[in-house]
Length: 98
Image (cartoon, rainbow, N blue to C red; front, side):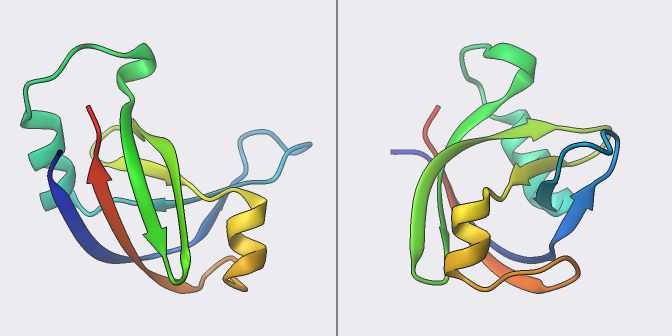
């Protein structure tokens, strides 16, 4: 079992590719630093496997490193189930699996 982190962050749309709609929340700096400093096996793109809970929805995914923080993708089914839109503040619980 890995470490567990709870935080609140705003939903944002990644607009680097105009044809796609990718939505994320950022893991706060302090938690990102803790995750980054954990010893683990290297994975593609520096990703870390996690179990995530937002509201009543739990799923497995990966978080991806950015310049300073990890980014957590929010797939459409989660956004729909939890009625999330860009700019909404969301409480997130993540458990590292790596």
